[in-house]
Image (cartoon, rainbow, N blue to C red):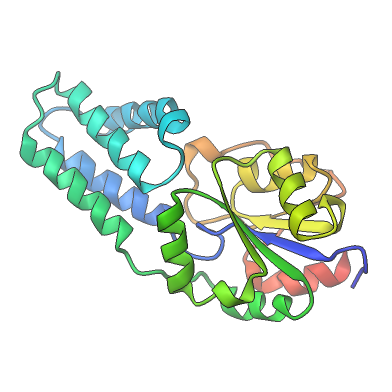
Length: 232
């Protein structure tokens, strides 16, 4: 193991536990609710447009997603959406907020092994209360030295986090499923970026992979992370 690496950052949603799958299932439910008003493909496009518009207002997470669904429902029905449909959308969001946590493969043993050798920092976007709930239910909380729940992930986010909880980004590795939020900005900050692709990818989180960059790596799942870190 290289002595230069002292800190490992982990994304949470779709890196440590399932998340995007539940958004996709709720979108399918949303499409069924509005099937008499609009085609599913067009509805998905309109919802994505609303989510993009609203990120600056509501941030990332379930609550902003629900508000974007309500806004889209009002728009595509020319303000005639039944109150019962709005109620169903709110209920779907509440179910998402109450959904139990399902850890992804190899997460518990990998995080546990690394906690003995590195400083571990969870760096995640989303709603504060929801992310705290998920971390508490995951059983991983005691393995992390610090948790940063942030509004967005840009290079300065990682510089601040790894300076505050480690020895700077140059001696840190960020692990996550999002090329746009976890990998690219961490590398631009001076750290390592390890991409662990998830089963589902949100359109807004897509970005070009920094192929050929000396600090970029890809893993199929977290089961290979300990060996990878030994090679850096």
